[in-house]
Length: 342
Image (cartoon, rainbow, N blue to C red; front, side):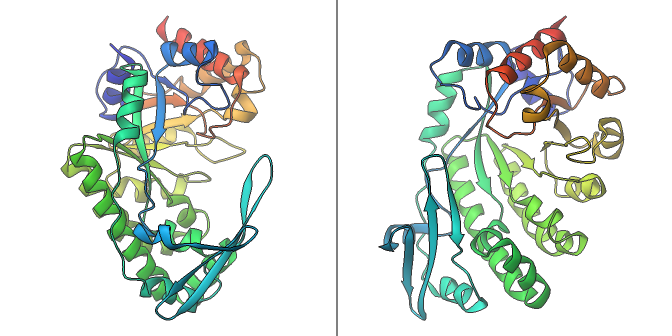
């Protein structure tokens, strides 16, 4: 059984020859290094690619003006709004968000939307690169990523409390744009998507937010993916135990990273009893705190303890999808895959 077959069968809740062990990408490894090649060949790797476009901005992304160091703005039919990005040699961060007020959001909505042209070329290039050694997914946002990433975290929460109709409208618009992009990508042969954004709601807004912003909008997104026979893989960090039935109701095929305490609150046996017949569980080992720090024998011991009471169907042993692990974690992923094969 190839790694690609093993992962897909696990996601489909079918019998596999062994539990897949799936790092999320190559972390900080150089793609052409020997350890990266070994990680790909000896584990069941999950690789993410990009659609080449921003579905929220559409073609307006090409009309952004840089008006200062890290300062950007765009003119709309009802006014200008701007934001600031600060960069260092190592990283970058949003220091001033595009939406500072509901009026900024209305300015964004006043822009006549021109649909972008996503491309599946990065997906197919990655498929060619790893072959059947893993599963390639296109990373996409859900609709709530529009208000949640254009407002600051504080303003996102405040506007949900004070102006919920605006957050719902932005989520609806965002979902429509993402669905359109997904349909184009599916027609180009993309067969797996990883959806981010759920944690903005589960971790910041709570149950009422889930009912209003995830169920009505992520469900049709996932239905669209399934209509083309593709996989809908869902990402949601944090303490998700109480939300597992809600996430299952979206119709997702797989869920990561299911963090164990103290970083999350997920016990795999409990999670499998709650949603395992419908959803493939992915994760439960922390990339940085376990896989990248602890010696191989202890990592194996922790992994075996986590999975000892699990049914061997519908589960992928993985990290927390940080994408920033190093060689030590890579070696531990390889050791876990070898352990599962014996």
